[in-house]
Image 1: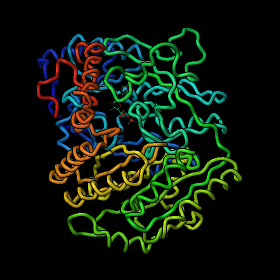
Image 2 (image 1 turned 135 degrees about the horizontal axis):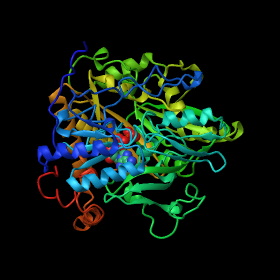
Image 3 (image 1 turned 90 degrees about the vertical axis):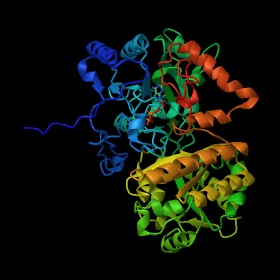
Length: 562
Ligand code: ADP
């Protein structure tokens, strides 16, 4: 006989009586099928971010389902107790009409619903709802069709459950050699979900939101809307012209809680006819300033064609996948001397910053660009070009090379193993691509690193004109002190950055009120407009309350904002 699975008492969303909640669950189970509604009463399992070892596009064996996938009921990398941000149930709609039914149901019972695509929003809250006990609407499980790939227009139309791996695989299976996809650092997530959250990738098509064309959306009151050319019956332009006619509404559905996106169109990059990835190292901390000044004009002119990636070398130690304790067993911030000690034995040699980049096009075209880049980068005293041919096939460089040429990969998160049971949270401020700003952000983050004693991994990413500093803070999920310190460090960084005029482009769901609060120009005029829109589109406040700091009237001023 099978041992009985242990059970948890499911949480109930605030504001609905327990028996009424279960009546509501019975009703939606009848409507959508019992198998498509799960009460969250099992022990919470954290799953894994990794499917490594199972996937190898190069030798053609592809497995996209991991036996222990990332959880859809909570954040598998929780920075507070997992039970704080946990779903009461998960619903699996199979169609846009199912989503519409769920929305009508949520309005009838005033149950908050939190839509996810695949719920792998690692470092920003994963699948967790902001409101404890909200029902997670897991769109990805059943709505995972690639509805179209057009090799002539270089476009696709996808549902929420299409991962980068699945899209890549399909492009290869159909033999579309002229098409590339753009992938973010981790290929396991949803193409649609990442674009909605304004995630980025590393080919010239890396700004995912900017490459989208056309959405299908279920509004919080249950209307189904198509944006752009999709509103024109019989059109054949939905994926080639994003704007259609009239107000361009797509923006209000990104990083928002104004609608549930059930389809998205995206442009795909034509195969450029070859690529070369390159790596430079820079010796001193202060080199950052000169390097960023060199990067700006090259990036804006597209000589540097993909997102610039300037990383602090400590991450190289962590990317080995080995825990921190193999390098250093003491407390406090990781000693710089230990980092240099390790790098002296590494093919990269002793350095503080690394630049990973890629050039595209036929060989002669690449040569021209690589020569200009080399000439400019070598102006920094002590700069070195690393010869990729001398790097072993296991070197992290090749993971960057895959990602920058549109091949999904998962190696990036190996740095989470820095601590046992590693989790991570990110501080992601935006600055102009100027040396002085980069240095100021670096100094500020470094002071926090020293003060909180938790190691940070730094990545300065230049999209085009702007620079995003991504500070990843890794903590042991089983260590409440470390989790609390990580959260405090993030809060302090957000505040200090805002005082200096820097704001975040994306944040963890527990920090979204704080970040939204920093965008306060003219007596919080932007948030007032956001709230007006929220109350108009979602009068019952059922859709993802609190997402991006936007609370509906029913919740506002009742202690939810933190
Ligand atoms: P990924 O699958 O890339 O990991 P998630 O599913 O975690 O992305 O989505 C990131 C965030 O975007 C979610 O937390 C949710 O707030 C929002 N989101 C994702 N998919 C949708 C959708 N289809 N409609 C509306 N919001 C969504």
